[in-house]
Image (cartoon, rainbow, N blue to C red; front, top):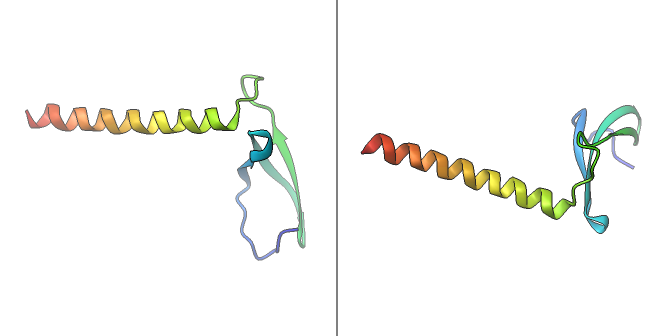
Length: 77
């Protein structure tokens, strides 16, 4: 149960660590301390393990940082 004073976004990622899965959940209804959600199907039709999704996100962040640093060095030179 979730207190109705807790603000939830209309959509959020629901991580289930035990199964190493992550799902996009959308709130469909809310009644006091109860919330009903619907899960969106993955766009590719394939479920990506949670650890792999986290590693991919980390690599994308590293890539963005490196591109930014290359721009800085190129502009400074």
